[in-house]
Length: 347
Picture 1 (tube, rainbow, N blue to C red):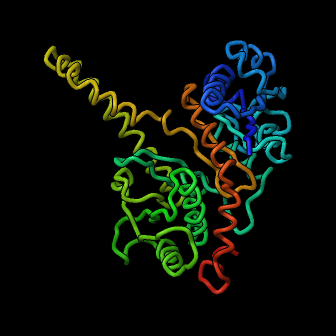
Picture 2 (cartoon, helix red, strand yellow; picture 1 turned 180 degrees about the horizontal axis):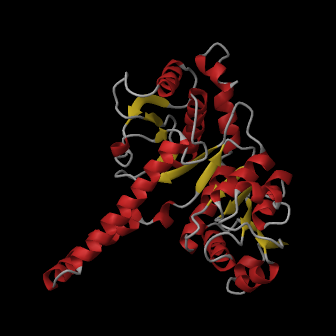
């Protein structure tokens, strides 16, 4: 199916200019993409002047209000009928578009999307998932990254099913390798909740994944696993630690290369390697977190993303639509027999 994607044009640090530029870049790469830009019509039309080829593939839906970064989820919900974020998500609900992309307030987007789209049958809670860079050629899918601070074993099993479906689409794996994030790899390690989830996944049949037990946080970036499952509290802490470490490494390298003339010469010699490192750690190249488990596709872009980052988020949304992420998750849940431990988990 040819994806038509709603863009919350007012979300993000720079608003319509960058959101429109990102959509233009995505359409340059994929000529079939269609867009519905939601937000201040005057600003959107002004931004579209720089991308005439995008105008023919785009419609505008004027939204008089905007969800600010400081708005609480409750505030965002109350005003969702007139905000660009709320109207973009509602367009998914009505079937006017196939997916929505926003770079706005994460908590507000989750609240609006969950209320408008509801969770899929067999899923108790939606999870925030993203692709994180690894030492291997493919990224690792990690979830939950902050949508659910407290989770039971049933939630973790459902996250594993959703994460595996996501990995199958993004990387083409038949049976993604799945592990639970834990404080150790030994079978006896971890809380009762993690132990219960592991036992359920080990005993399940018919799932499109290979459950391989536990992994620790220092192995997230090694590429030894395709999907890492955890609760939103631990996942968000791990994500922020990874982002902070990446900034630390790049800043340290920059400072070291500027410390002396010899270091500057060394930088010139090693520039290809440092450029590769910078590209690998650039969050714009991995932009596009997904709210999995909803009856619709909603993708969260970094608020500070540039046009390249927004384009990547748009492409993630389109890929999930084209490869039927909702149907894949539903099929995986249905394949769990009613006598399987996971069947009780999915009810």
